[in-house]
Image 1: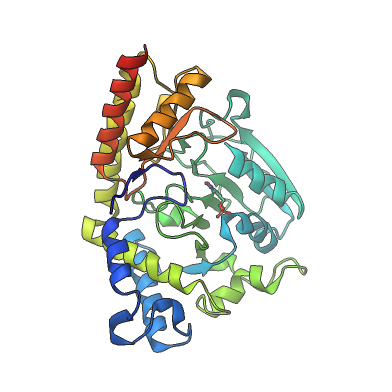
Image 2: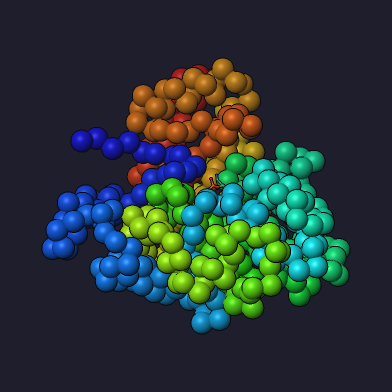
Length: 360
Ligand code: PMP
């Protein structure tokens, strides 16, 4: 067996230890004679898996009791509609558009009410985070929306926007559990799990209880109502059982690594290795304003398309996979999620140095 270093932006690398454990439990989960995939979601066995997953997730993020944790299907993209449908009581919301995922969320919200674009970094190809310390927040706004880590462009909010008392809704898909957060600063913090947490097919949403009610847009499908899932503890219908099980294993792995403080320190070290090289390279450059750089997604370019293509091809031959930048940006992108080991980053940088020497 040979595993490569996988720099994919998502679905992405998972901890090897977790994959091994899952493979050992594949045919017979802890003596029950079947795989977790084959188990009823109403069985005691699965209920325990779900309860433990939620408890560990809450522990990792220090989530207070007045927040619900919901495991939902439909991907982060489905939440682009669910959020306005559940929250737009006044039919107004303010969006900060710092990349394609925020833009998609903003466009979706326009179907349900007045979605104001109150700040954007579109003018410079989303290569920075705008100053959000004193924005004009609509008095009627039901919430202020951000995409906290911009997967495609490699920017991250280092300071959350001043929402002037409005609930903050944040898509954290690509920085989920990469560092500690103060959950009480959020009305909703949600993300798809296929980047930093588990396999594709699920969203975890942490929602302040007062934002969950029956008072939603009348046309809201039952499955998109937060209350449906909150009342049923994420078991309204058949959830993505295997994904919940895998996420649970990753939560345990994170606890073993020392929790989110330790993860943050490790992620900073890993990103530093690559950023230091980019800052000293004569061939490769980062594309993001330094103070807004993400620890998770690091785009870089040579400035020449043929050289970028050559780099991606040769890197793959050397066991460094999925380094091609997003189709809309070009160049390269290395995603350094929690499960990417330091050795992977060091190998990437060593490869980049060699490539630079051979191609300058
Ligand atoms: N938000 C962000 C920040 C993302 O990176 C992505 C996926 N790359 C999405 C939303 C969309 O996620 P999904 O495919 O789960 O709908």
